[in-house]
Amino acid sequence: MSDKYQAFTQSAIGKLLVKNLGLPSPAKLERYTAGDPLVRGTVLVGGRGRLADELPGLLDVIGAASETARAEGRRYKGLVFDATGLTSIDQLVEMQEFFTPVLRSLESCPRVVVIGTPPELVKGAERVAQRALEGFTRSLGKEIGRGGTVQLVYVADGYEDSLLSTLGFLLSPKSAYVSGQVVRIGAHREQKAAPVADWSRPLAGKVAFVTGASRGIGEEIARVLHRDGASIVGLDVPQAADDLQRVMKELDGDWLTLDITAKDAPQRIAQHLKEKHGGVDIVVHNAGVTLDKKLANQTPERFGKVLQINIEAPEKITAELLEQKVVNAGGRIVGVASIAGIAGNVGQTSYAASKAGVIGFVDSLTNELEDGITINAVAPGFIITQMTAAVPFATREVGQRLNAMAQGGLPVDVAETIAWYASPGSTAVNGNVVRVCGQMMLGA
Ligand SMILES: NC(=O)c1ccc[n+]([C@@H]2O[C@H](COP(=O)([O-])OP(=O)(O)OC[C@H]3O[C@@H](n4cnc5c(N)ncnc54)[C@H](O)[C@@H]3O)[C@@H](O)[C@H]2O)c1
Image (tube, helix red, strand yellow):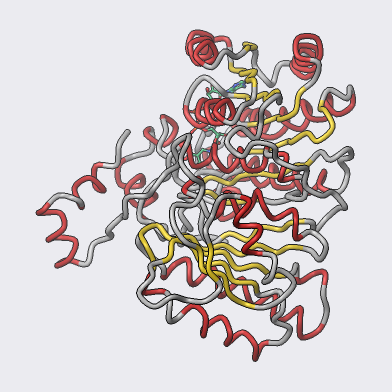
């Protein structure tokens, strides 16, 4: 399931054709390998506001070298701009003054993070200026090229210390296929980040439950959470039992084979996690299906089945786990939505409804959870798996290229995003829906 077009563009003849015909040229994205430093180069810090003085110290904690003044001839891996001090539109020019001179001195796969204040928490001209940051970062994301990413992180006043896990993710190769996103920290409830004892194994001692874990994105989520120190309990349908056991045995994990839409599934899952593991810390609702048909040709059975698997079952399982207090304090609930649930897609009224429902599910619980429990979702774009291998060639090619990185993502890109949500350092990261889509050109 490799990207043959990308391999071709890196051959001699491919390079020639890309140059002369103006074809899309997907950069080779850097990805994280266990043991690597989180940030592979120097970060230039700029701007003014609540965080400017603290940023070099925060970056130091995640092992990133930083400078606050641009050194002539230096190439930068990351740029972090504190925009929390910008309180009126005319001050936004300070961003242009910081970024323009340095954009040509960036290393490959650069990382840009702009930090602002959630607009909904401020008023008047400041609110206007803070909201404007979104247009700036989303546009720079589409311009930056060479595998670069650009994000906007809105941090509520008083939550500056809760920024670490997010900086560690967004400045590292772990966020290879995440760009043009807006993340909110501390914007919903008073929950501050817990300390992270070991940044290479932030999930040590945690139990993670992953549905649809026998293959594809779910398998990779299990692998990445295990790499970060968690014990894994994987679930899949009985037909996938062999694959599930193979993966779980490799990860020293435990497994459950059942259909999540079975009537007794929520109780069986709750009982298993309680009795065998004393509870659960991370719940990832990854299992999902597509049964595409244009609405004019749809049947109630197919339409209903997609809704049952993709959203009704996660809702019921979560309700049961919360009611029986199976989710431990500091727990993490993660939904897997889809870009289709945001932008819509031909033939996918059922799938897109179910995935928009996943976003509604996050919204419905954001302010309800207690004991440091959070809920967030990822919305993958085109991820290269068996699910997307079944898409017809022409649609697949268009789907893969129509994003700022001109390529499909890998299951690991979704898994790394979920591992960031799962970190003890992410307690203030709540109620977010982050797209893992290489900044798709279509949709929201
Ligand atoms: N691949 C993509 O590009 C993409 C894009 C957006 C969203 N997603 C979402 O990511 C998730 C994983 O997708 P994938 O590409 O790895 O798909 P996949 O088909 O490879 O894997 C899905 C897994 O879920 C399991 N599953 C399905 N129905 C189940 C049920 N009733 N009970 C228990 N397990 C069940 C399957 O057996 C399978 O192992 C899905 O929710 C999907 O909608 C994928």
